[in-house]
Image (cartoon, rainbow over all chains, first blue to last red; front, side, top):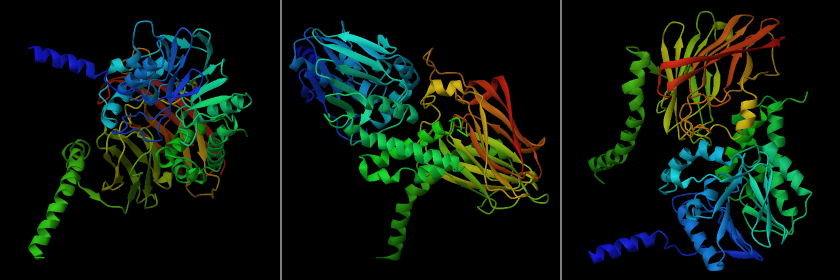
Length: 306
Length: 276
């Protein structure tokens, strides 16, 4: 009996017994775990994105929780090892699985989940589908309880206070998705762009190609000391490091528009558009054709400027 | 090596392939063929129509499918109807498309949802009643339950809008390639609703009729396998100046797999002036 009890105690501990996630302090109090450029699969369980946290004098804001509950627990452990301050906010930068599946590790009293005003809608419409895919393709065992919607919705801007440290959250118009949220740390002039910026990893369009380009054009005019992308290294040369992404999106826009104007069809666009970019990106083969498909379906509904 | 062993090995190697191939045909052989073509003979052939689709689809909710006709539409011999199926979809019938000699060329392209690895097949019915089938296997899954649109707000804003695009190169009396775009989310009944967080009731375009100067060019009965923003390509022969018109309606059904309990939705129409 005693042994059984011990065993079950051990089993209960097991869920938490993950090693702490490796994080790098890129700026004072800003910790990032840099994901590897891989397609989400049964080996990496979708843990591929940049995630991390920002520490203030009174509490911690977690920015994205990772691609699996396990990665979420590992991130939680990294937070606990780094600081004795409690987590007060979990900020989800958008709905994609590699950024939200660790949420459950932070579902604790005193923690507020924050997201774009469209995030809970996106979670509601995509959640069930995502869970099925996760169980099927990522070898995760997820249920409805793992999709945790925000307690606080950001309409346009929201300031959150971590004690001696203010974060400015911005809800963007449709770009990478229709629920992109970025985080700006005033203390260090650091802009956590998440998946509005892809470096090395091919940009993935799941919102609006035109919307994304217009957000990049707007943000290009700003100055930031450091920018943290959703995939790829943190950079200090903004906007230079963003130009490959902008160039890729611009090529898609120009080439697809001209194909539509010539009366060409989606099949041809998928076969021909954007291949000059093939060697510039990791995971090009996995995402490019789908990007063209999504962008074509968007652009064919543009008002013709004739 | 002994010949018998060789053949035996070959059979052993091929067996699993044959078994899966047979499994992929099960739905067609055991259900669909009897349901839609009971007692009829269907010849598998590429001489009348040929279907084309990507072997591996990038987006299961938007798989481009093309049916190429190999004969001209004449008064004496023409393709009267093309029926399209995705065998393993919850509602396998994609649509029934009727043509006339005035269509000129019974080519057809559309975008479909594919819910699991499946054959997509097209059956052409000639004016003399003979049936010809062409099929293509497609690897894609989850197309029917995939979330509604990347940019939901933009999609809802343009609901009901229609665009016709006529190919620029045209010769008098020759069939002209025409593209019809309809803005409609074509909700499958397998996607989640953003408010209730339950599955959203289906709402899809089910009837479609394209006419030129009131003469039918393409008449279709379609279903949830048609992707959001239904998009079709077909031909017609613009003999003189006139009006190309589309009328369509949508419907909402209780179940994604049955069409017995449905509520009629709205009627839409749009037209386009054509000068040859």
